[in-house]
Amino acid sequence: MKTIEGSPLYRIMHPNRLAVIGASNSMVNMGTTILGNIMAFDFKGEVYPVHPRLEKVLGLKAYASVKEVPTVPDLALIVVPTKIVAQVLQECGEKGVRHVIIVSGGFRESGEEGKRSEQELLEIAKHYGIRFTGPNCIGVVNPGHRFNTTMFHYNASMEGFIGMISQSGSFITQIFIHLDKFGLGFSQGISVGNQADIDIAACIQYLGACERTKVIGLYIEGLSNPDDFIQTSREVSKNKPIVAMYVGGTKAGSRAGRSHTGALSASDDIYNGVFRQCGIVRAYSLEELFDFCWALGTQPLMKGNQVAVFTHSGGPGATAADAADRAGLELPSLSVNTQKKLHNYVPRTGSLSNPIDMTFTRDFEDIMVHIPRILLEDDELDGILMYFLLNTDNFKRLLGKAESALFQTLEEFEMYLIQLCTRFAKQAKSSNKPLLGSSFLQRNERFIRELEDLGIPILPSPERSAKAMGALYRNSVMRNALNLEARKGRPQGA
Image (cartoon, one colour):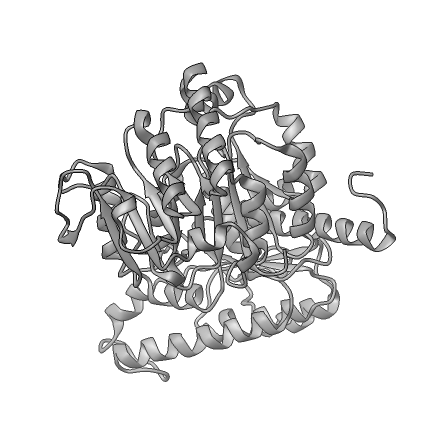
């Protein structure tokens, strides 16, 4: 697929006319919550609530059935009791609706009767040429189209670059809050539920063609069609990184997956092998999933695994070094030439070994400009891990009480920091080497917020930044191997 317009998901993610079947005026109704979020996100298309008895739903004219809607919707959202989902899908087909999201649950995940009901949905959809996500899903979010069918209001960044595919609708929604902590957001997010029709592989293909998506994140409980997944993932991961969190590899995880989405799971060893074959980086926690996505979506490939750790606090530097080693990275001794250049900026109380430890400095430019430049210019280094401890509250308290040659007011101080952050980010990006930061400070600290908004990931701990750098290295190795294999013309899987 060369463009996303060719995917059955395109109209699901970009509808202009939407029927919401199952919303009411009750605050505790799921369909009502979803319709409220669609309206709150300022969706620009036409919305047609469908309810058999109400004349208006949330102030909008309602229709007794989808057949009475004055035009053919691009997309129907079905949030009705399980026992009437098939009937509603039939009516959608008769109306001419060809794209559907089935939020309602109680199908394959609930047992044999549910499996038969899900098969009935497939037969109806095939008869009318309908493509659908679900059942048992929470829908989709597409910030660029102002479209959110989930149960949570979307507050995250409108400029998101992470494409998310999840068998858990809850993860899609609750991750809004997690990403907002770092100024991040989705390019597009898709909850696939039971994957009765459109599966994870189709979603990967779709996001692989999405220009706004720089990295794809997966939450997997089991695969409905492993062959399609492997073939599609191998092709997409040659050009766009994929990170996956798989939770079915243990007995408890497998049992939970079957009851949640009816997923068929396998051992961790099998999935680890599949992921390696596909060029997919595995994450073992929700934090890792998005740490890795953040790094892979903003940083260039690594040529090797040689990294430098730069800090002005010894403990975080040692922690980063230890975590880097565990992540498959190496911290080489710095060359004599690099040490000579650093000598002018590292105080006598500091360390010129690797990690480079400032211990203390009075000059912000040493930390933000000069030392990073020297490390980025060292051809023997493939990446930089940097720990930030610039707590500006100390300087704010001293303003007006102590002298500074650079600033006298809080406004001047903040402008100075912004200029330093801009120079730092420009220098890092022009080097074509990955640079990941870490700090226990968060976005309420101005310079952290500036760096993150300029495309420099600042992870919440040295360990997390080192693990993310390890993910960058693994992705680089796997992508190079896949592309080399393709150039040699070997058959996939050989």
